[in-house]
Amino acid sequence: MVTMDMMKTFDKLYVAAVALFIYFLSMSIKTIYGLRIELVPRTSVDSVLFPKNLTIEEIHQRIVDLSRARTFHLASASVAKSSQNTLNREPETLKPPISSSPLAILYLTKMSIGSSKFSPYLVVDTGVYDTWLQCEGCKSCFPVKGGSFSAQQSKSYHASSCNDPLCFDKSCFRNLCSYNWMYRDGGLLKGVLGTDSFTFNGGNSTGITFPTLAFGCAYESQNIIFGGYIGSENVISGVFGLGAGQRSILKQLETVTDLRFSYCLPSWTFPNGSSTFLRFGPDAQITGDDKRKVQTISLMPNMSRYYVNVTGISVDEKRLDINPGLFKLKNDGSGGFAIDSGVGPTLLVPDAYSVLRTQMIRNFFRYAWHPIEGKETPYDLCFKAASSAGNIDVKIPSMTIHFQGGDLAVGSNSVFESIDGLLCLIFQPTEQLGPNLLGAFQQANNRFLFDVKKSTVSFVPETCNEK
Image (tube, rainbow, N blue to C red; front, side, top):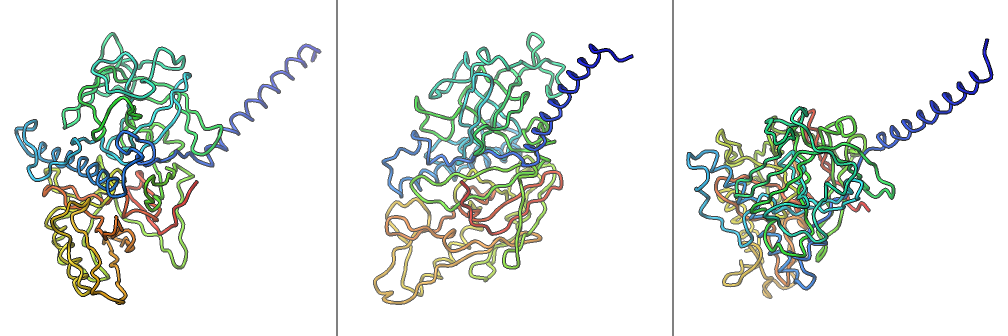
């Protein structure tokens, strides 16, 4: 016999079940619409490296220095891998004014971490899988405006135990999982692996919160720099890793990200640049039409960076005489061609760059334009329009980067930039050992979709003006 008390209990259970269903439904709707986070150019927020009084030429110079500092570190890592004396030997030809650092990266992101709502800027690194923050109470700290993350103040923070599946090397201290990371430039992190809530806003006022994401909480930060000019106004607190390892956000949130992400970088408008979004999972879509064909090429599998197979370069549809071997990844880890939005200009090994440079000089010789010499310019090759050109319609060259399986068209406005009356080739030479890097300037106004599960990257022309 069903009593009144039993009916009341049933009603309460029914209401609770409906509430639980609505909660999970709302979460699934968020998942369906995907996840996105904002990508912010350093030029707009890093007042230490890019103060507001810089000229356009000075901004370009610092972007070039930042990019060369990053590739200098990568070249150093290649040398170290192939050398018995891994700590002492460095490339000789590339000595950037900004300190060599793997963290000399052009794009940042921001999120809210923990119950304390700590909201740091993190550099977005596609070459590592770990996310880490400097934590309050650290030794040998780098300065952070507003302070470092306080694990003690966040009620949702938990230090990971040695038995945690993401505690890889099982290096422990008082049964806590130690977090240790050493960069090739001498940067050293020591701390604890922990978990906390991460809230990603991505243009949504409420944001999406994930309660237990693992990250490194660094209590010792030695020689950690983000490309130089670091001081009390530094706003960068750590790294957001976009590699494909087990501890990456991509992998930890695999049910949401499906191991895929996309972005569309806008053209660089100085002095501040424009923000855009990293999109994950179902939100990471790419579409074309009759005029804009989506092309898909293979990523090199099981690599820490997003390497692709490049077979050549054309200028105005003329294939340049560049040895394709200059773009190949070698067994010792040197060379290769990676897609890297962390650098501004595309960087090519000297033997490839010199062929491109020579062709550009020939192109402009017909207009009596000659390379600028005896004056410091942010880029290696700059021209000043000669008055003798008269009313001749000067054609600025376009380019094509040929991949195995596809071609990336690079418009003339992403090949040359007008800087204080000069026209500069926004490509740069890098160290002989490479790697070659496809930079943000040449990726502009194309949507790229990286599918780690399929080991592919797709791209299509798109006007990138996301708000």
